[in-house]
Image 1: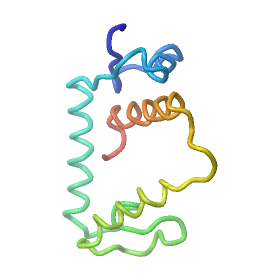
Image 2: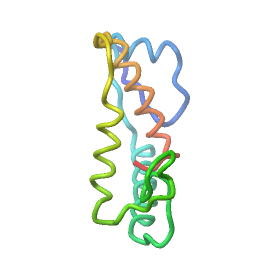
Image 3: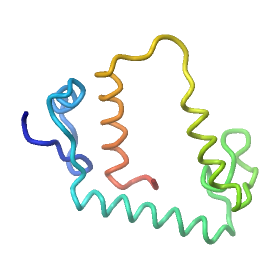
Image 4: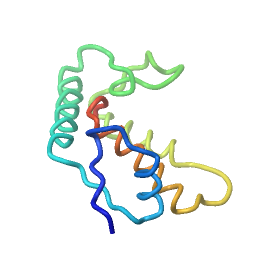
Length: 117
């Protein structure tokens, strides 16, 4: 097996995506990317702790409910509901290679540190 692919550092190549999708290479999150993820988390936690202003999808509803404030004690439930609402689908399950590729792209995006996780 080839060397692991480090995510969150440099853009992924089509070849790296293919290799992870087909299971021939593993993925690693390097320390620099982990630190960026932690910084993003701390930013989100500060927004939650302040709770004095609405922050879309962190302490508000979504879409047409964007102006609905969610009480601090319900924020965990909000996040669980988001996961559940995005976890539904129809049709046959996707092939493992497609799922692996999509998960790599999402993990890489989050590891760049531009989103609060």
